[in-house]
Length: 218
Image 1: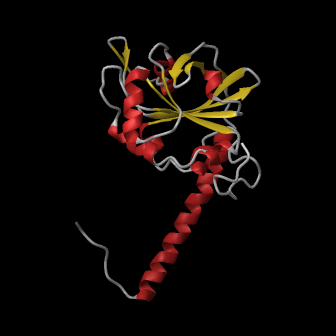
Image 2: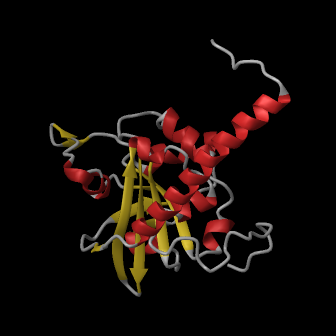
């Protein structure tokens, strides 16, 4: 492996300042892109999806847990698999304490096609406490893997694909606002990176000023 060139502190500082200008430009471009994402139109979810979780049956509206927004992680776990996808597991390991999302009116849930009886022991093995649901008896995973005109169905079975989907609710109406798949998940995992995918963004104003996770009022 090729290592960086060894230089003086002065040359390093000059090179760092040059790179900093590019990093600042990238930050401004990312903020503009986030604002454009918030202006995306949304589509109402008419299908009646039913999931199975730790408390039994649940609808998509139930996954909001009373909050305004919902972020779903499409975790690759086919019905016939004994364990979930290692890459998806690594992604889930990066998710921080959910109190920071919840304090900003946003719930987070994991959904997989595997039956809940297979999800439960794997979840326990990984030591996760995140809400996790099975879409085994619904077309949820199939439907939200069809974005961008991609069929992703072989022999009438949906192909496993990692992704994130964001939803917004208005009373009992649920709207799909955004989805990202595959490389679109690169760099995600922190609270603010996930909020930047949502329609409401980093709400409320000044929400980047965080508290200790045990000091939030849910």
